Length: 233
Image 1 (cartoon, rainbow, N blue to C red):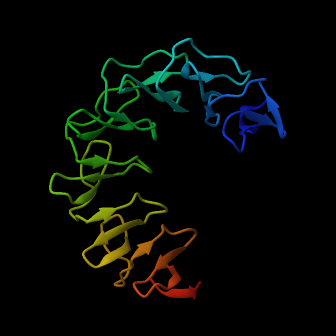
Image 2 (tube, rainbow, N blue to C red):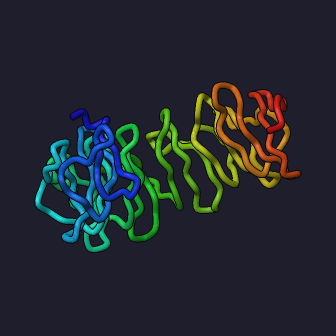
């Protein structure tokens, strides 16, 4: 079986292949398979990971286990979060209050002082700064919340992409990001410049040149990259 074709059942308690149950076991909970063909499962003994044949990858049990990204998975043991490799081996000695999933070879984490930063594939911080929050990297940039509560985009060195700050911020998608100021949400370029003057109560990233937005008048619209309304939904 190709692990990509193995599905999670509707009740999320077993796996199916071509709509038929596989592995001959019903679990308390399962999550879907990720590369290199490993999935998290929970039975009465706790959480672990299984391979594409339904065999346990290791004997250890965790309070919680998540999917593999870049051959690394987040697990929880006695309220401590850390990552393991595809053999079930712990990657580093540091414990965290929370760990994310690896994206673009780095991962966001929160320490026990409630400070956020990113670590590399070996668990080492990739810069010295600590933030109130950081998100995942996408296309080389991540969102970070500063001590003053404002948001900026950072690169892999923890450096700011531009000199603009925002009340809230999203990652870049096809060269543009969503941002929020005191008047609402809008789209920006990599210089932090607004694409248009209008502000919205809710917006989505651009999808092939168009984005869904909600006005303060409770009207859902579709706009183009110049901010022109092309359709009312």
